[in-house]
Length: 265
Image 1 (tube, helix red, strand yellow):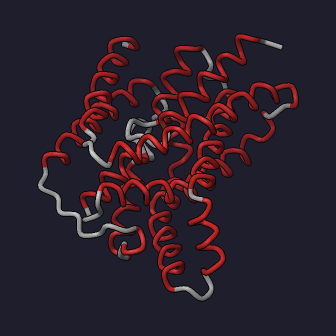
Image 2 (cartoon, rainbow, N blue to C red; image 1 turned 90 degrees about the horizontal axis):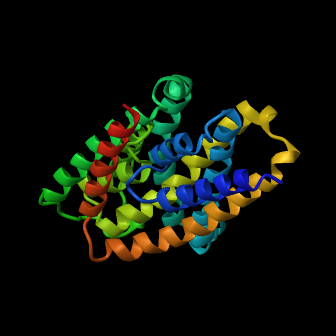
Image 3 (cartoon, rainbow, N blue to C red; image 1 turned 90 degrees about the vertical axis):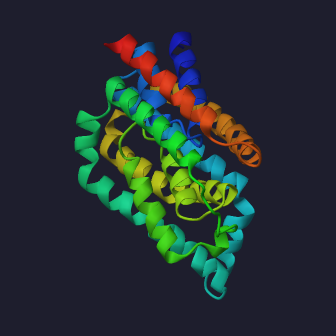
């Protein structure tokens, strides 16, 4: 058993779980850390896909009651139907654009420098949005309108660019379009479920031949680490947004982006 490889798997799992739902770009961090660890070959890319699935399962576990209630009442309860439709609407823009541009994005944009630029620009966008006098008209995920769902969906599509941050785009986009900070954060969690299941499934189907029983230990370490750290990150973010702005994440993004450009240039 290769201890160094398992250590790399643990670190990448920790990075994925800790960053997936924070507005700092998990994909960007995985690319940067993968390059630093020299853990960035084709098999490592499949590994990154698998541990993203672990992070999504953490959301499913955290919100299992809401999800089960929606499934059980979707045929006859208006609230469950509206919630499901809004998630579907918000899912479509990124899903369709990802299907069309997936290969080009992977080929040309999955580089540390691209990530660094996106981190800096995203940080500046957060600072700008946090200065705006936003009014929260929607304080529950069950009150999100169809228009807001579409708007958040297009905001999520921007996050196809690595380094932008899917959670950052959907949370800040939700705030721009009238959702409260807490409601935008929760909706971002739910919206992660279909988009990331779809992305993970698509990538696994394309790369299944790279999977091997010999790598089971590596995948298991990364998967469990990502699941546990994602659960912690979800709980942290919900508590954090209750009394803080996202400025600290903005400055972190900018500082990290500058360091990455300096290091990889």
